[in-house]
Structures are given as structure tokens and as C-alpha cells.
Image (cartoon, rainbow, N blue to C red; front, side, top):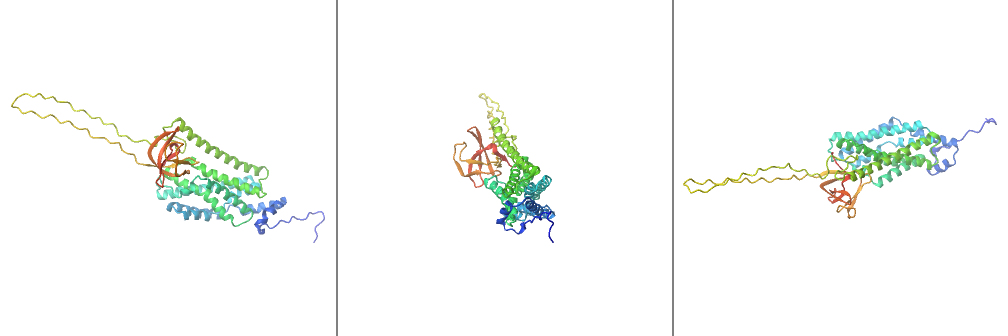
Length: 399
């Protein structure tokens, strides 16, 4: 049967699912609007949130709870591997290219729910074990090191590129993305259950998550699937402004700590920017003891047959002791980390492996010195090294 002359020939859409990954970028570059719409709809269908997604999230939550309880690196890795494909992350980029602002908000809602599930799993693990204030298992996941930032961006970008090319490697990059953006929330939940809620702790994982979303959108854009129309660009700008806002809050928090130091150098600053009630180096002193001096008795020697009474012995006052305070556990509250030096002062040399990332635990030795207009605290690292670092960026654990 021949088509009528006035009817256009139906569009032939290539079978994207069977295209070799290396050819996908070339095909999308030369694709017609109809072919692009077909491919975007295919991606949207592949990245729908369904009950299976939350079932796999539940399995991952069980693994991370056990990993926290037993401080097991293997279980933490298993929690990332069994986690579902990062559908909310990918879905935001897909629906920005589709575009559908409503679907983007729905994906962001699923991402928020997933993040809260990981956070409360950490609190649940700490509750089960009655975690002590100075305990934080799997602390490496929450370190503020440049490797983790680069890893988050790279994992997100690779997940987007592998998803577009329909490559199975996206499952590995998605596991890495989960480990660097969602698993740290479980550690924050553990810390909050043991030490109390600190809202500022959410800044670090929040920036990582938005940075990953931004990298995913840029990966789609690089693959000729940029945000489209007002709703698509609105979604992209929403992520951008959110990322900028968290960066500004992080900078303001750091500046507030420095301001507190300048205004009141005698008080250390907590992670929330509020001076603590007492200096870290406060040494408890004993209450003063008042000793009554004994009254002198003067005896006159008179020759007599009456025996002379001996003088009343003078009471010797008992010595008083100042109790020595026990060492205090603390962690680094500076988001950019800080260095440990052999002596107080900015010109002093560094100890071996001097850089401490955010969340690193150490021991305060109850000795502080002011040098170069900064207050320095004497600390002992986990490897036994003793050095000096800025006291105002240390948060005592349990306060």
C-alpha cells in the first residue's frame, strides 16, 4: 500500500537501546527533534521511581545499619553496591531535558525522602548500640577531603554519561555516587543521636548532593541533551541557586567562627558558631580553704613546786590539691580542615601528616596558648603525635 502524496513519511526512530555506546553521542548530535523526544521519553521511562526502588533502598539501609554497628568497611561497601540505581539524581537531569518542572520537583522529593531514610538509619543504629559520645564508626565517609569532592562530581557525571549510552557501568558509578552523597548522612544521624542535633552538619552532604545534581545536568548537556524551555531551565537554575546558597552559608559559618575568635578570644567556638560555656582549657580549681591560726599562749616561769604545763601544740594545716582534669575528646569543626603544628604559632613547623579533615577526632590536652592573635590548643592525634592547632575550630564531643 502506498501512502497518499499529501501525507508526510512517518519518522523512523532509531533503536537507541541497541546502539553501540560509542555511537550514541554521534546519533544524538545529528538526531531530529522527534528522535530526541523519543530518546528522552525512553530515559524517563527507564528512570521511573517504583516500589522496587524503595525495596532496594531498604536492603541498603539494613547493610549500613549493620556496618555502623560493627564498624565494618565491607558492609558499608555492600550498602552502596546493593543500593538502587541513582534514579532521583538521573531523573532530575532527564526531566530538565524533557522538560517537566513538576517531574523535577517529584524527583527532588524522592531524593529528599531517600536522604532522610539514610539519616534516620544512622540514628537508629546509634540508638540500638547506645553509642557513646566519642564514638563515630566509618568516619572516613564524612571526611572533608578534596578527593571526596572530585569523586562525587566524577561519579555523578559518569552516571549520567553511562545512562545516556545505556552502559551497565552506570551501576558501579551509581554505587560510588551513593557512597559519597547518601551514606555520609547515616554517619551524621549516628553523631546526632550520640551528641545532639547540629543543623550545620547538613551543609557538607547538602553541597555534595547539589553538586552531583549539577554535574549530572552538565553531563546531559555535554551529550546534546541540555535543559529545554522555561521549565527545564528553571529546574537547572533552581539547582544552581541552591548550590550557591549552601556555599554562601558555609562561608558565613566559617567567617562567624573567625569573628567569634576576634571578639572573644577566651571562649572557643562550637561548630554552630556559638561560644561554649567554658573554655576548652578550663582547669577546675578547688574551693579556698580557710585555716584559723592557733592562738598563742604565753607561759611565765615561776619557781614553784607546781609542775609547768607544756605548751599547746600548733596544728599544721593539711595541704590542698588542685585536681588534674582528664583529657577531652573533640573533633575538627572547620569545613576546610586545618593543620597541626609542633608549636603554637603560624610560623611553626608541621607535625607528620599534619592535615586534619572535617570530623577528625583527637584528644585535647587541656593546655592553650595565644600566639599570632589566635588561640592554640595542645592536642594529641590518634597516632600518638602531640601538637598545636586552632582551638576555636575544635568541638568537644558530647557538648
